[in-house]
Image (cartoon, rainbow, N blue to C red; front, top):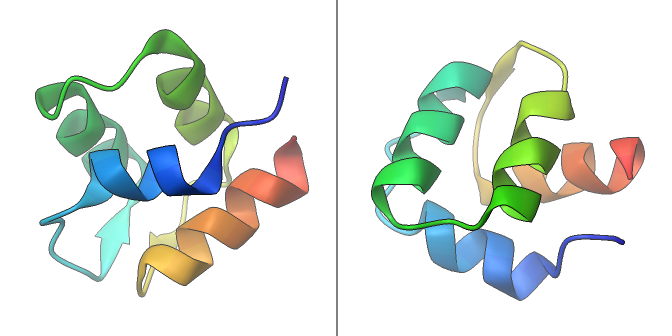
Length: 63
């Protein structure tokens, strides 16, 4: 099941960009993200993301 982009952005609120995958996962964990969101973030390529739209696009690409 695909991750809801609004839910994803809720868990990434307050994230400082640019950020790498591991930083995104850590931040989402601290924000109380559920396992589905965390798994989706772990599947995106390990690179630097310049903002929330780039993260959402990467999550959609691996869904």
